[in-house]
Image 1 (cartoon, rainbow, N blue to C red):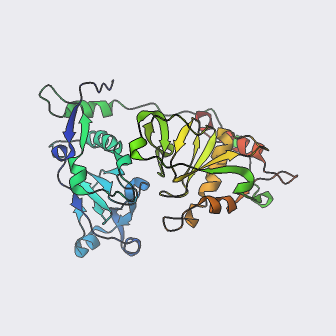
Image 2 (cartoon, rainbow, N blue to C red):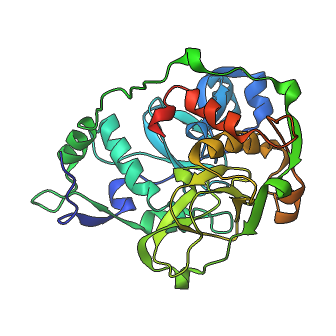
Image 3 (cartoon, one colour):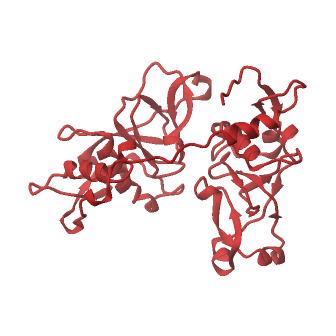
Length: 337
């Protein structure tokens, strides 16, 4: 089923959705002390925005706002603009907002279609530009329309139902995976492994629509916040690491790109050559350092250069990049990278 946007029509979000439902602060301690089956939603872009599952009766006693039907939630701050679908309802914290489709007889597929459309607007928000109800509801989104100019709900449902694909297959077998020998690993400063460069700020006035990847400090979509047109780009075959925003998220970049100033760019030093398999191994080790940093303690260029990674080592003391490559190649689905 094809997706032809030529005849789509623009609608205000307030024409499609009911007004926002605001939540109140819910702490991790409350969730730990009162475990249950109700999803507690905050502003994270991970785990579908869910910070844990809490007891519904406790939430009612506390007067927390419970949504008892399918809904979308949007992060107000934090990963501002990130939209999640909650198929079984939820309770929302103070850093998220919930909203439902106005139309009756909507399905899961309608919510999934609209979530995808709304996520395309996430780049408009960040830590300094939080989601505000009036502003968000006044935004316009393009949707398929019927012959009367109304949202084509039947098309949205049919299109999402058509996206059932065959299971991904792999030719790699688990028996071929080499064993880890952690005691033989050695420590290396990141500055000894990489040429580390800081991204460059690009103002909205300078952002022209195009086909080049623009990387922001986000935790999804391989770090690509939007597409722009840029005359000068960072070269491909490198690792990018967020020093701000979603601090510590790391990605391999197979294509040229523009990196914002919230992103550090890591190129291999002259004594080794990066490829996508080695990069995947290193990214896993790099991301293990995420817990050391956060919004109040950014992973700056200077701190990153001094950060120590523990890696497989050869007898001569240099990192065993061949082992890293072969290990990733041995994993199931590595042939799909």
